[in-house]
Image (tube, rainbow, N blue to C red; front, side, top):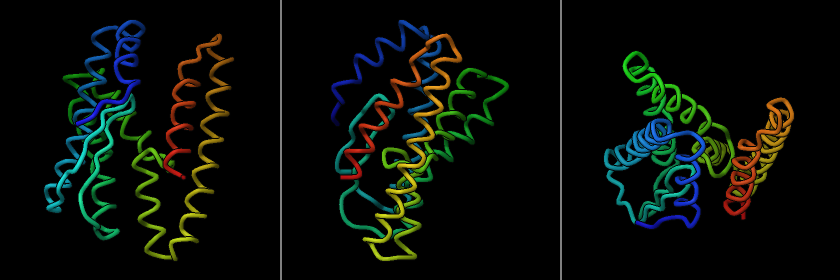
Length: 181
């Protein structure tokens, strides 16, 4: 298990700006999401080779090569767990439920550092060759990254210069750029 260099700073800032309750709800939502990925891996008999904890969740690396269907199942398991747990626990744990649903929905955005990007890549690989699939997925990812950026700039001015989403967007850009290489 490895830790991203940004994780301690992110957790500290999360507690300072959002409070302990929201930070704990967020951590629990991320844990449930990642448990979905791990459970899917166990169901598909995949061996975990590395887990890296980062500000946006965890990057779980599996050993060996698998089919696109297996990878798609593993990619979608996290968001499905997030959405289901959020809806099931809405009445009892409102803050966790909202964060979990948002986390699951955001992870379905088709950019490389999110599960939606992995799912898109697996789906397109099945229909086309690798080079064409990479071109299609990278184009879709760039379009969504631009939309995310424009939305974050809009919110920056609309919310009296709250730059938190802009910082998240910058992190997503950087992670996506690394994964596109």
